[in-house]
Length: 510
Picture: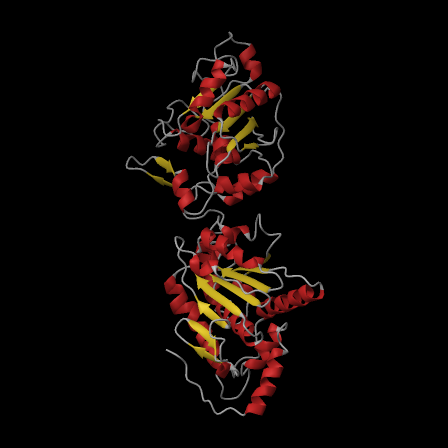
């Protein structure tokens, strides 16, 4: 319903108010302190003195960034990501930013969205309505169920702030967010659960020249993958990230927070997400934990010369996927950097694999047979030794493996990844963000026989994740055990992988 406010306004006083508020165009903190009745006896905010310290810091950052952009005559988008525990006042801050953006800049456009329509309607937007009704310049706008719209004649479409429900399959509402040489503000609430396509379309709003562009995303850090997580990871150079522990904020029920810590543990994922504002070590049904991967990226190990050098090849032929080649010697996957190829011709892929195998004198090559059957055939035709095709969907091997009990895995891929998971606990991988994202991406479950079943690539793509090509290539190096060179030399030629083995005739430890 549209809001109704008294229309008896002194024109002179209103003009003075407008001049003051326009002076806060690059001072959102000053705006928030001025337009709301902080500490006023009998008013709804009689208890308050103003924003909390962390809210002040964000408002100051926005203002200072706008000033720097103006001084340098540039349109660099301001991107701020805030991961936090519960109860810190993020909804209020979102409302303030939205109202400041509208009130201080003519023909400003803004959008606010959340992880679900229910969150948007029942939690996020009510905060906007609450603070709108406390604002001393609210009579300049009409408030509807889904928008705040300027009352200035002819500006209803060009000067407004909307509440927008997203749909990953229909992103048109976000695709049209442009406002050349004006101001654009985009706000995401509970951003961890906003689908990647919405983030991608929102990027299109950041291209307007001469425009003040402000994109602020908030949320509990519930997911270990996705665009919100990337704001604090591989995309952190483009985002100003803040992680806020609820215990550091005044006015919060600290007794409840302390109870959670006692009940779940200081480093439990529940406390990390709900209290400390940190991303979980392991997401819901996540197969490999982020902490395990991060430790492997930093770990120093030394590969022994006698250990076999194994190559894993995950073959792609079209789309966004890439053929990935990964090498591993014992507990070290850094001996040769991973190789990524965008080659559709399988014969060219085979030629590259043959070149790498001969150059580095690999002991065994394991190739995914999904798209790689032609590569396997061509390599064998070329006389490349020790080439083995692996069926990801085939039966898991019953022979002893690094971390396998026969019958525990739904298929060969689940078995290889389980071996990889165990290996990571004391091994080293390249400090490669794409590999890290691939490793923590897949979820897992159990089939009707209680066997581990890894999430399919197709299902990962539906969640907005990339196909884990590099991680699958690394997992392939665990398809079967390969005999160390020194041991192979003590045995008859042709007995084991690494010396023209009979396929899958594996006996030795790594």
